[in-house]
Amino acid sequence: MKIGFIGLGNMGAPMALNLLKAGHQLSVFDLSEAAVASLVEAGAERADSPQAIAGGGAELIVTMLPAAPHVKSVYLGDEGLIACSRPDVMLIDCSTIDPYSAREVAAAAASHGNPMLDAPVSGGTGGAAAGTLTFMVGGSAEHFQQAQPVLAAMGKNIVHCGDSGNGQVAKVANNMLLGISMIGVSEAMALGVSLGMDPKTLAGIINTSSGRCWSADTYNPFPGVMDNVPASRGYSGGFGSDLMLKDLGLATEAAKLARQPVLLGALAQQIYQGFSLQGNGGLDFSAIIKQYTRES
Ligand code: NAD
Image 1 (spheres, rainbow, N blue to C red):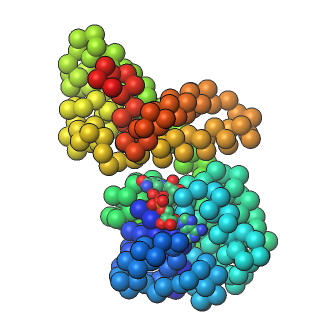
Image 2: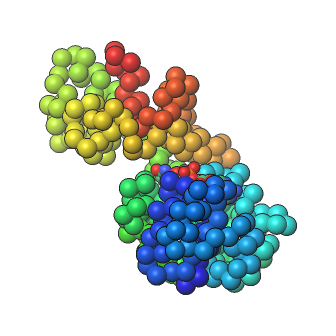
């Protein structure tokens, strides 16, 4: 299949490589020349703009951009991807953005005759490289079926979440819970250790008791409790605190528009905001435990 790919960053580049590996013909664009050059070296064709991707005969176009303003600027307007694409070309946005923006862009695509899916991912850069991402997909069931083989080249778990925007709804709801649960686990671990518990013993109790959750049993924030997690390598790698802050912002903004209370989500956002202000935005999000420990 002839596929266009726009946004070749930490996630987009390995995703695009997996499409090439699966035998698709790829034309690529990014504002960064270096990002384009490394994909061209791997066999992709260079495009000089989103318009060139749209006009170059792509049958399907994938975007993986930082945030909603970038997505809107690429898709909308007289020079945007939608206006420049043939009406039957399928558009798939894998960026993490708010559900309202996703629905706005999908409605513009539909009015031009373009099938569109929002398909944010989880699994991080490791999952992108391994082709094991989870895709949370919003759009019609028919378009979901059509896109499945292409998404399967980049991911393992591909879930249809409902109509347009629902992929983003699933993503923000999950990540809001993740932020809250990581703060909760940090608070409980720090309390137990300050009261005299051995951290590994405490984690063992939590992980076989009613406090068990992913943040405790798979990604424990206390240093030395688990191997191969960011807490055991100075909170490097993993999922950055600033990315968590971005996702919590998406959740609270969407909640405001839906007039839905997210009390703990808003508190988690403030806690990560303070953490970022202290210069910790580049640390993995489990480093939030530093807010509770004396050496911070
Ligand atoms: P990134 O900043 O590494 O990459 C974004 C790329 O988009 C950059 O190469 C940038 O040059 C390019 N870009 C920006 N504006 C552009 C434009 N107008 N036209 C063409 N290219 C443009 O970001 P990332 O880590 O790859 O994340 C991409 C998306 O995936 C974000 O929405 C992020 O929240 C989400 N996400 C990231 C992770 C992760 O672990 N990094 C995990 C899940 C989801």
